[in-house]
Amino acid sequence: MAIVLQEPSRTFSEYLLIPGYSSAECSPENVSLRTPLTKFRKGEEPAITMNIPLTSAVMQAVSDDNMAVALAKEGGVAFIFGSQSIENQAKMVRRAKSYKAGFVQSDSNLRPDQTLQDVIRLKEEKGHSTIAVTEDGKPDGVLKGLVTSKDYRVSRIPMDTPVSEFMTPVDKLVYGLDGITLSEANDLIWEHKVNQLPVVDEEMHLKGLVFRKDYDAHKENPLELLDENKRYIVGAGVNTRDYAQRIPALLEAGVDVLTIDSSEGYSEWQARTLKWVRDNYGDSVKIGAGNVVDREGFRFLAENGADFVKVGIGGGSICITREQKGIGRGQASAVLDVAAARDEYFKETGIYVPICSDGGIVHDYHMTLALAMGADFIMLGRYFARFDESPSAKVFVNGTYMKEYWGEGSARARNWQRYDLGGSSNLKFEEGVDSYVPYAGSLHENVNLSLLKVKSTMCNCGVLSIKELQEKGRITLVSATSIVEGGAHDVLLKDATVR
Image 1: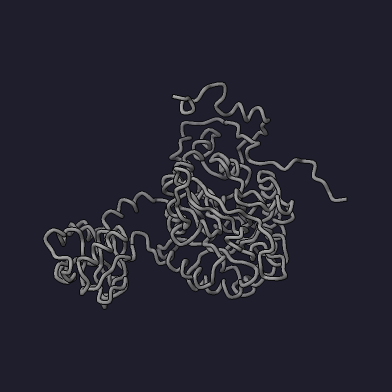
Image 2: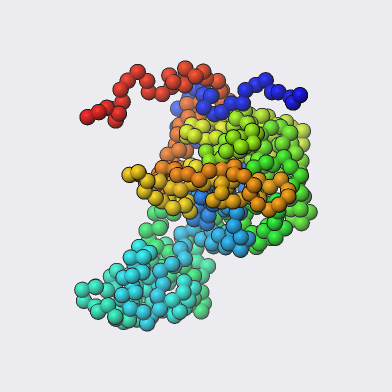
């Protein structure tokens, strides 16, 4: 007979935080959400520390290079999906790493012999009013000039007029040399009263553009997560099949941190992958592993060299692993169990291995509960899929804008490597669905609102850091009736009233 755990498998919705004493110091602006991403020894600092406890899921519908840049601007890390060719994934990593904060690669480019009609077409297509004119029309070609809206009037210039006749030529432009800092570039912009600054190398090849309007945007992201070269921190997912080819390519592209993307982390396949990384790169390559839901799974991955451990099986909104296979665990129970194992391991070895709560987040307050229960950071799929920056299509469904969102175990993604248990290389049955999620706008606004709620709750608990929340926070189970009591009840909501 199988061992039966007597404690029910619980979700975040079954718990509440109990308020604590809040001093005058407890205000959201004083709360720090800094948290370790990778393991470290007692008394040392982790190789990577995030400024917010959020990472985006290793999914086709969630994490590409655009998401990587957007989330790094906020202080978190995106893990670019691995269910694509090695070459394509490496290109995404390279694009995200080459996106220097405040420096934009020109994606609106023309040759000098093209015409005003091409300018109008490109402006409509890209939505940009600044167009770089290069010798070959490529974003890294030799700069010949710029075209902005002040360089032409459609009513006064024939549509077949060559760009060379009305552009601002390079000898009349203010430009910076490759290697210029963002601060120096902005000084030139303000000193010369221009709206944009081309950056070129010694041979006048265009390297990027700096815009006046981006200066304020850059100041709005004081928590952006950068490496030692002032590039955004970028993550990527790998599998347990082609890791010997994929990992070197991703490292060459500049990836900062990896994670094994698998529905089941307590396996020989993950141990083999981790051993290969340690044998070939030592501790220089940072790689997380998972997913697990108990102490034994955590211990296995920690002892095999994982830099962090992902927790959660079957709790994602598009995951049907529990329905299909009858395995998994309520996310709250899993996090509590694995967090206790992490703390035991730290006491025994002096090595702190961060844990990531992956799945089961429905409401913003679940984030705070996950952190209080011991998670060092959270991985989110549905949450990030709703935003402009996710790679999925924005569609109009029944009068409402939605974003497409599908699981890696769905027939659409066919990410068989994530569910690989050996054997043939194909998806034998689905463990995910294809769906829609309500479109929610920009990542920046939504993430800041969600984290304001987290910080406010922490203040209600009288704490100013995640570590303090885990040490001093108090959590209570709630009954079914108290869940009802916690929402609006015994009233007729105005927006539901028939007018």
